[in-house]
Image (cartoon, rainbow, N blue to C red; front, side):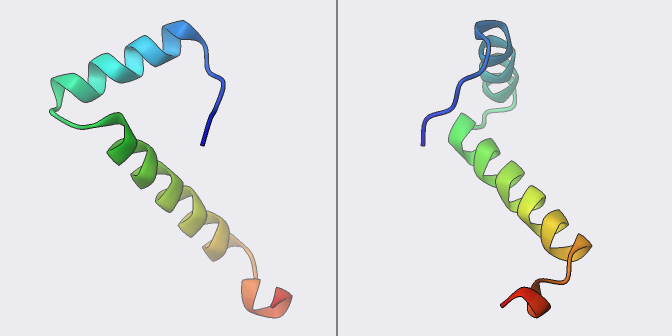
Length: 49
């Protein structure tokens, strides 16, 4: 996956992950999972399948 974010945001994200001993990909995976869960819970996916 490739995304476009500002250099400033990337540096902040990288630094924060490093300070917490996390890989950026781990955090991105968590954020995507949380976002998907929120989308799933706020819509009626069972009706759309």
